[in-house]
Amino acid sequence: MIVAALYLLSMATALTAKRIAERKLRDMQARRAQIISAARRIAELEGWSNVTVRRLSDEISYSQPVLYAHFGSREGILAAVAIEGFQEIGLALEKARKRVKRGNPLKAVAVAYLEFAASSPALYEAMFCLSLTVQFDHAATPPALRFAFAQLLELFPGPRSRSDVLSELFWASLHGIAELTRTKRFPPIRQKERVRTLVELFAFP
Image (cartoon, rainbow, N blue to C red; front, side, top):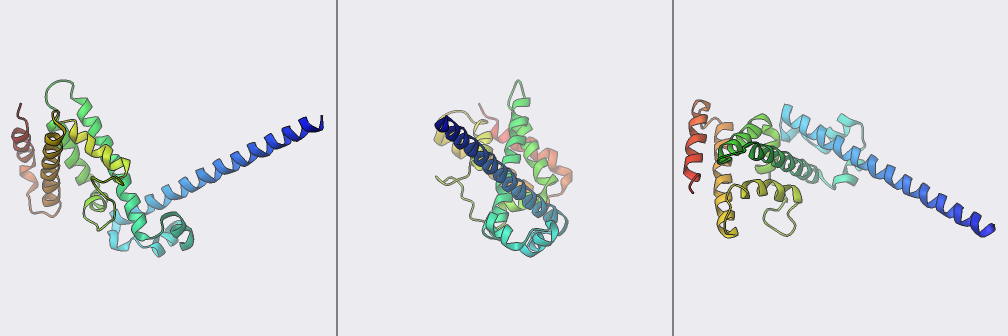
């Protein structure tokens, strides 16, 4: 009976410890999400220069040590924002690609890419224009980046080396259009014609 009681006690203790650990993990994930959301909100309204650890601490009422404990540095926060952005653009491109039941989905993906860049300029800037240590085409590349690039790879079936290069060139073209439009080098009035011509250039058999 004593052995059984001790066993039940140990099981209850283990279950309690598991629940505490799960709650701590949920709390940590919620704090991370809140910090990232606040960084994005400030950046969209005021620019990334105003996204500092001190400002975020004031904005969400967490101490600066809490922010450092989660991300290590301001650069870590911006990297987390960028990774979240790649997950979002990946989902947008996937949705656009799968929406096309027949024919070539190049146009749908191109439009979705440019709409994402235009609708979230600060997020797009974090993904591509800030000096971050998020690595591309590397063993340490985060899954979100791989997922986003995979949506472009799906557009160009064939040998992997050829698919990689075509995807990179298509991506470079879209990024160039997005950036030159954002910085007002390209007039928006010709955007549809740009997309149509770009798709024609890449829509070979």
